[in-house]
Image 1 (cartoon, rainbow, N blue to C red):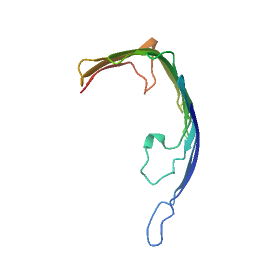
Image 2: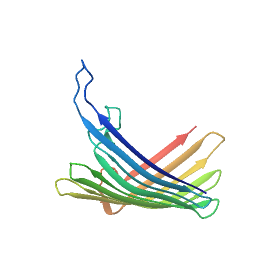
Image 3: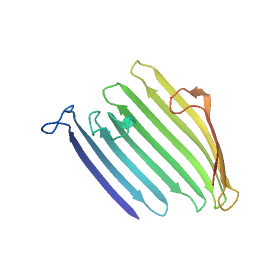
Image 4: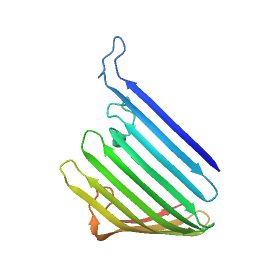
Length: 178
């Protein structure tokens, strides 16, 4: 069993150095996480925020000016069977946009194949007052065909035609890895 607690804080001072030009932008970012791993389960709980003016242009723009709080858990019921769940809320700071999302899955796997069935829910509250929801059934599977070739397929299908969240539409996947 292992448990790790992490906390980080960073501050950007974009004031230009003598003789240079710059925006003078200042911002901060912070992160708090608790992570636990054991033989039977894994758990991650987190909260993080990044101001829009944080950094010097090297960070992922989709994380700029956001606060995200969530939990991610997986329980191993046996060597081959596991249950997973995650939930989070993400706010786009200063924009009046919020996403609440959750997912759960049941997975069976061995050295040759895997199968997963689950449920995904996402609700986006937009700045104009619109609410977009997606409620999806998830099915996926993979099969090892040789030492190096693995094929996989999956689908995320709406329940009651709810697939309006931009990042959680109806989706079909087919893939191969070599």
